Figure 1 (tube, rainbow, N blue to C red):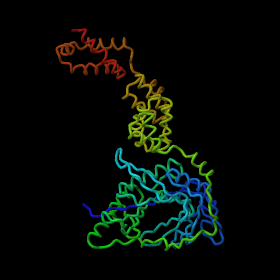
Figure 2: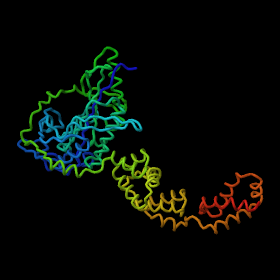
Figure 3: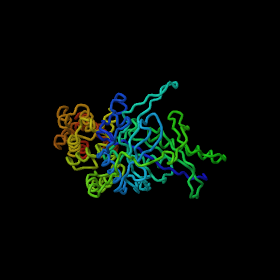
Length: 482
């Protein structure tokens, strides 16, 4: 048993999906796809004499997140200058919030196992501007800087050090990302850097109230990297402490290929940044009426949606969570339920069949040709025994490829089941007449032949016979020949 307790806090940086940047009118662009340094102006380039102006929509987006994370909205906000020198920071300081952030004292419950939750406290939610982006050339030939990202509204969410493992860190970060996407304020794309997670990691002797020396982990581009990097760093620190060494307070990177952390630079303290109030921006006042308007516009959050799907639709906790994960999927599902009020059946069709087709063809729910009403019609055909479940899966595959309705596919291919009792009874008699030896064997006690007879009827009808009805009619027909 280890003699040390992990202490982990997370800093999450999320670019906000506003039209313009935080303090100027430049458009927010995709920093991966748009040519470098094409969405810039004297303000976001830090030219002398340029004055920033606060983006109101960015403030409202930040308030939405703070409210969703159960934070107290601060009426009095103040922007500050955070001073440091780095090539991607053209002003040599970053406009941020320090002592007076937008939100404080929030919390978020994460699920560790089915029915087991843990509350992670959130210290602060504050606004700042993003930096530029550096691209380091191979063989040490220099670095290139792109300022398209400079000045993009950036939200920082800082947790209390309540996390105790890499898996808890991953669960917390994934839930934050889900909420931000539900709110429509961030795309959650970690590969493009619009959602970035940085854990602060330390160890302390078990039972000690004092915190150990922490390291901050950077360059995490996936939730797996967050969990694995945190686990590696905890093991590295424990080995150092157990061997009588010490842990340096530093910023470390995660090498995704080698699966190790490495030192980047000494970790700064708050006083190193020389914070002071931003002289070019007035204090920001958020009144109760503004808070009330933002709160009223909040969508249904994932936890509430999951609970509603379980209580109103009778879904399992797993199915409810899967369908509530993406707001577009949830909206699609609810449109299907409105057209065919059988939520459990529709949930099964979506999670088991539709998702498989989407994964196979690498399509999102908004890209597919199947409509919610189309899936509802297909589920209705199965419920009415117009087609079998297996036939319906083939119909769905064709609907997915060409956008046809279920009715059109069934009619064009002649897939409708034969559910006419008189017609099926006649076909059953023909099958029995054609196989007298098998009938005799069945009547002599070989009841396993019943499945064989069903297969013969299905073969005679080219798979169109209603299997349930065939089974219902077959036994009396056989018994009549005793």
